Image 1 (cartoon, one colour):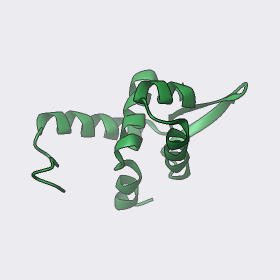
Image 2 (cartoon, rainbow, N blue to C red):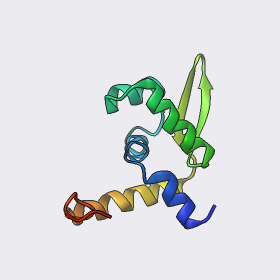
Image 3 (spheres, rainbow, N blue to C red):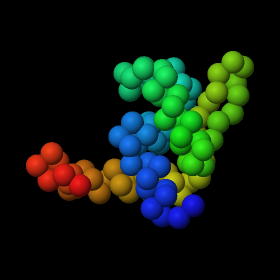
Image 4 (cartoon, rainbow, N blue to C red):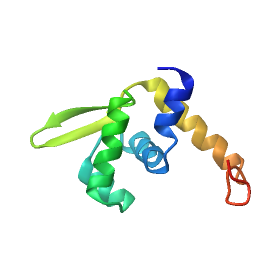
Amino acid sequence: MNGPALLKCICDETRFEILELLQIDNELCVNDFVDKLEKDQPLVSHHLKTLKQCGIVKSRNEGKKAMYSISNPQLSTLISAVTKTSNKIPTLCTDENSC
């Protein structure tokens, strides 16, 4: 996967929120994401499927649940860096200054 393809996979707001949660909790199931993100289960499942197809998250079965985690420590570093940088540049991509 090249850089633009990776960024395209993570640029959706919900997908990025999923990755941020995985940085905090390391491993979550779909119901955890639904509760924490306050979004519908089908939407969360769709985004997890996309992240998995891109190779950004991986899953393992635990009974009837699929537990999701970030597939590579370098991706965690990238997500952390993006979060820290965006917090330092609060006007980045606002409605007035769309990307």
